[in-house]
Image 1 (cartoon, rainbow, N blue to C red):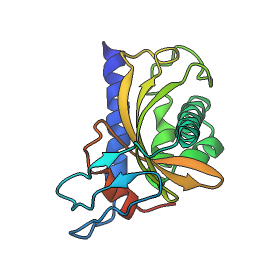
Image 2: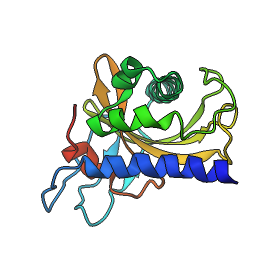
Image 3: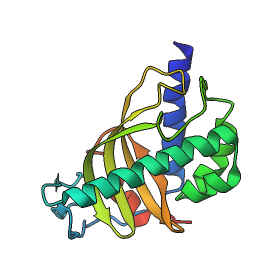
Image 4: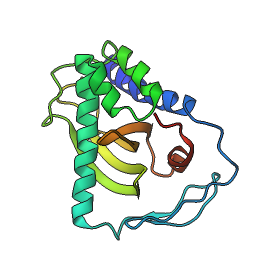
Length: 186
């Protein structure tokens, strides 16, 4: 029970660090349509209406691979306390400092591997060259003592030649659009 609480605290701390990295947003945010996602313009007071019916199967598979790779690198970097790996997967500076302390918080039961980090893509919420938002099921029970799997909504930014995390949410209808438009990138 304590280990389950630790994992939930871990996810909550990641969200808190993300919020602290936000710059002051303007009063109106308009979501711009991309070629693979349909978005209705909206303000910061209500989340956008999203459909992913226009996403090709190839792009969906590519996004699933990007997302899985980011989660694997995140857990691998935290487990091994490798600042270079963390640096490559942190889309905002706040995550770099937090990851250094996370190793001792997590109740590790095994080493994270590409096979035991299980990420099941549910929906692509936003697909832009500068921001990717996905909803998925994250199952880390094979290497962390937790009650998972967890539903997660992740905001990713380009970092070097790959993608890194910028923000984490629990629900699809949260205000991740603000992160894509205003969060301070590295």
